[in-house]
Length: 507
Image 1 (tube, helix red, strand yellow):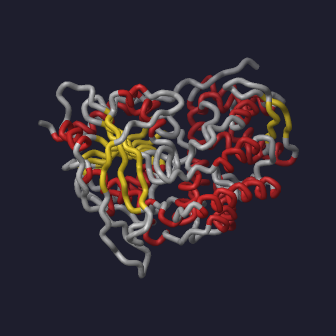
Image 2 (cartoon, rainbow, N blue to C red):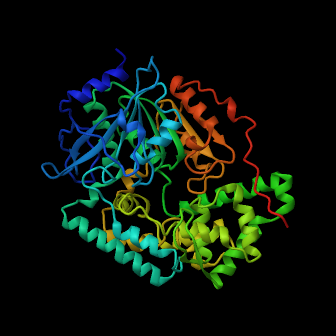
Image 3 (tube, rainbow, N blue to C red):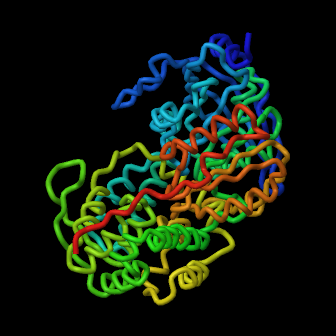
């Protein structure tokens, strides 16, 4: 019987297995506390997930804080999605979701459509604090703030006060319930996955992660290398360089790549000769004189008030709120008094799936690993380097993480930067997949991590943004080839690929 199939047997009759131990902070003990797997019904999301109907599910029960034995445990939801092939590969693939705080189970349809379980079992675990795990570090307070924020100035002090109130309310509620916020970090997260492999009786598996999941995967590879056959990293967030100032270089690289691709396409270049200049003009104009208008969310419903200022415009671009192919056209329309594309994209944020995203995990990771060692001044300097001439009121906020330093002063978790910002050096076969239009994790940063992975293959997919594999049939073929032959994947389909043609509007 293939090892991948045998894993299902262990779901039915689990036994306790010794946990892996995350390196503690200096001076803390290094206990050995057992984790175990417990079968349980699969989660029932509001929108049913077809793959869960045939999945085997349960919980990994693990220590909340491995440096403090005898305290609380966490229960992490697990699903094993059956393999489609009649002759499955021996090794399953385990998925590490992005965020931090993203709902891993919501990603299952994308993974299945991308062929992750075509030849091997697919194992999905909700990271500690995430939806379907216990405790759940959701922050409905922050979801409600985000819905309200579409009608507020992006970087205003009044907006900051509302955000910090939501952060404090969430923190107070979680800590009152006994949650140890310091235990929700990447080292503990990685130890959970190491424990899961042992608890399921899997000799070796493959790892696939995207965005924050690559930060986690590299941490896991560095701290718990046993049993890892191969690692696929999609939209790389390198642990060594994942800091708040880093967000500016990624934003500049991704947006710049979109504009360069427009310049390389004759129709786009002729219609939109200088989109970078147009963007700078619009950021400066909107920051000085914000637009306030009503717009309907794309999902339907009544129009809502939205405010478009310079910070909101950048946030929409970095957040992939518009398809990259539409960006030059949308900027041109905006410059001629037609902000509808951006306004509708902003209105989309007014519809929040309250409680689905674990903002508490985001805050604990960002505040213990990404923020320390740098300051608001460092973020501003990085912003000025990325976008010279933009208003400081825009550049003062790290893209996608506004007022993060102030939020961290409220969240108040220990500094783990020295133990987390470490390069992963490994000879385990690795695949690094990047999209040239990625505005969140710039494609060039993949090279930094790949230099330390001696058996790595790096692939860039032109015209794709964040989380490449679900968006690119070529990337799906490359990933399948890598999982079949980790040291010799077929990357030929990426040769000669070009971005999707840009939207050209009438003059």
